[in-house]
Image 1 (tube, rainbow, N blue to C red):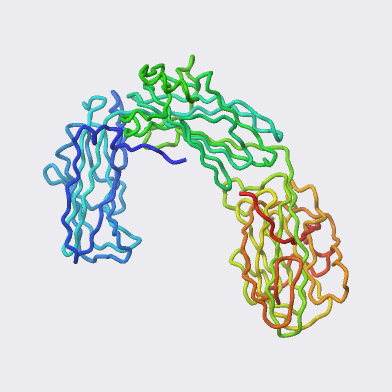
Image 2: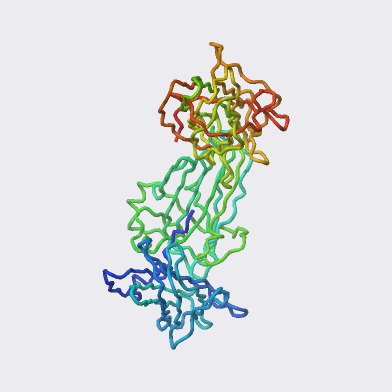
Amino acid sequence: MRQRISLLAACGLLTAGLVTVPAAAANAAEPVFRLAGPPGLLLPLHPATGSPKPVALNYRLEAPDQAASSDGEFTLTVDLSKLNGAATVQENPRAAVKKCAPAGGTLVCKQRGVRPGAPAGVELEVTAAKDAANGRTGVITVTGAAAGATVTPAVTGVQVGGPDLVMAEMNLKKELKPGESQPLPLVFSNKGSRPAKGIVLELEASHGLELPERYDNCTYRTTRTATAVVCTIEGDFDADASYELAGDSPLHLKAGANALDERFAYGVYPAPAAQQAAGTGSGASGADQQKTGDAASRAAKRLLTARKAVATAPLAGHGADLDPADNRRQAALTVQNTADFEAEPLTVKGAAGTTAKAVVAVRNNGPAWVAGQGDGRPAAVVDVELPQGLKVVTGPAACHPESATRYRCLTAPSVLESENVEFPFELKIENEVKDAKGAIRVGAAGPKGEPQRHSFDPVLANNLAPFTANPTATGPSPSPSAGTPSPSASASASASPSPSASGGATASGGKSDGPLASTGSEAGLLGVGAAGLLAVGAALYLSFRRRGTARV
């Protein structure tokens, strides 16, 4: 979830007319560099004792044209004359290179050269002034100049004090069964110095979790792997007060039939000032304040609301809301469920010198989807051992050679239930070897990336599948037999082959319409013999099947 606050608007500087962005006339022949910085900044109050907490304020020069660059010197002038006694500003004392020097009511900063991908800029620190009252505002304007270039200015509104919403961690049940539901006892506090004029509640549930309730002041967006919910709740949420969801607007979290290893995140942020000013037609009055003029329209809607909590819930450490670290929490949930990965057998036929396109395919038979824990690792890995006489001409980007006759393919970080994952290859039949044997194996990534048994996979016999070239038998290919397999991967990359056969070779048992292309890899973990497929003594049974319709 991202922070949804326009801090400049939160300071009220736009609506008060205190900030105007000066226009910069650009010569059409000159490159135009834009000074980029935050529109607004909230500062913690200066403490009665001890040192104040500085807040980083960085500006950088950006070229809208990615090819634009300049070797000349840029001068950035930071105008502090309109701070109105709200704050003090200095160059970051920890900056690697010092660029700025005070000059009257400004800081003048110089830097030479701007290149695409390496913009110039300045690093500042802003601290609330010792005598600045809670709510005092000011403005920082930064302008730039360079020979042969135009620089557009940047303006940042500054406010001393503000809301600091802190989300309490919910005591959620972490071990669930499919179909099991639990309430969400959501509690948050405003640990800042000023009230929040409305809040935005954000929830994100991974693919196997459900949020059954629907509210009119919430928006819902479902993607392939998660459902995101954003609710706007109106009202004044006072400083030094805690809040909970009102009893007539509960939330629940349910484990779906496809749930396995899941994530649930929840956060709270001040509402944008634009929504505050407009009254957010869809918001609920959450801080014991309800607008009577809207009573009729509200009565027809089901609104998520909040009220002051009876007691303040214990909260973790917090900071200013410019840093949303304490605004959001995340829970990992485990559901007692299984997911069955299956590899599809593959057969290639053709005379020496021909090529064919064929697809190595694996499938998640469910019932659960499989996803990593946010570390980007694949949901599963697939080892492909080529039969004798075959060579890879081209292979998918998700596959890399382990040797001349063996390739390892990685799925995406998630594989949905009933989803097929395909890896298209183009193979050359260099030598026509009858009944040449290879193998396909799917599982979890082991210590060295090799397939191992997924702990949740209940069917091991289908983790290993034969890969045969020029079979002499007319019946179905026999299933390889090996020791006890042990795969455990979670994520699959799918690729759609573009069939284009050449020569007289054919492939079957994955997707294919012609001879296989060659990628060049040597046998490794996948032994040609079925019994030698597992180096660790656990045999994985893989089978490739044609791509079905993945549920999105």
